Image 1 (tube, one colour):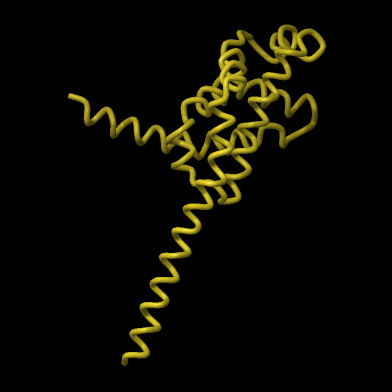
Image 2: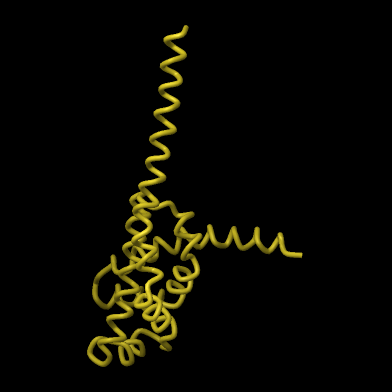
Length: 158
């Protein structure tokens, strides 16, 4: 009986230790992502990209494409690639969606909703069905979490 109790205690300790290690690893993985997200360069690029005004795919290219505005195109590519990378990490279970939601759901949601039509058209015109797929995945995972939290926040408001 004493031996069985000892094994049980050891198993519980092991499980708790593994859980803490995994949580610590997620935090270690997420911090460089957050450092980039909060950098002055990223914030400036994000704000600029979110203020681009375009009607459709062709209008976007005429204003912000690499041939006419390489700096604007590079900033757009940087934001898209960054969000794509977060989507890949989330899809592979390396980052908890709730952490991403807590820190950057607004950017994810507004970016996809603004650039969805552009990215979907890009897929068609370039025969590249994977273009932006992890940004879309990220949006589809984060939007329901954020929407649920907003409802809870609104309910608590007097």
